[in-house]
Image 1: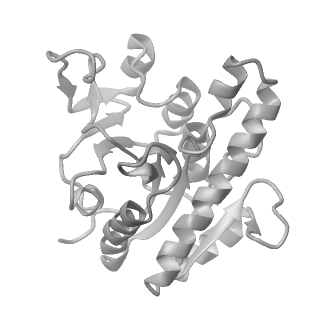
Image 2 (image 1 turned 180 degrees about the vertical axis):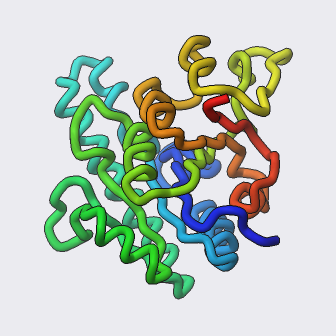
Image 3 (image 1 turned 60 degrees about the horizontal axis):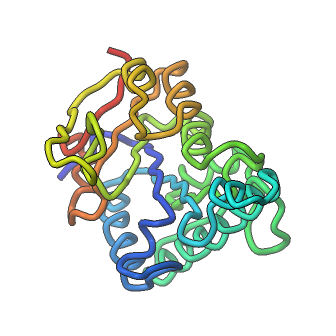
Length: 238
């Protein structure tokens, strides 16, 4: 299966790393995710990742329970660093070179984010994992994914989730929910579809960055996504 895209950014949710566990990281499921990502890399795709931290701590939920929002978001950034280190370890154990680049300083554990360094890593065949979101509170990892995708000049942003695309309403609540194979940025914003946060969609819209939402839990879907198959929902200008 030949790849359609040369350089992509994939946004993984922190919850996706839990597998069947109630919280934290499932090593078995993490290995499965990395195996799927490795297949895409084997096709010559330059692979960048952004991972959330919701399996450990979510800043918005912390703020909702009375914490200061900025402090809660900083804790969420640290959670993404933990997940990123776990991903890096899983890649390295399979002899796949990977680097974590963090938007916040984390001592000697990871590299600081430098745009040109990230691009050089990609050009040298390394998987790049962006940690700590944008490094600022009040911005989600969805927005960080859109920002980093633009900075590294990725051809497309993939949002790998537990559902197989964008729906007209919550498929977990409504049995008659319908998947929308193709939709514009404006429609997503106008209809308030909760596929990514509004800032991420607006950023993608302003720069014409296509976004594809697909189900990462189905075996082979990541490889199909980078090959350009119609497996989810594509968000574009028109």
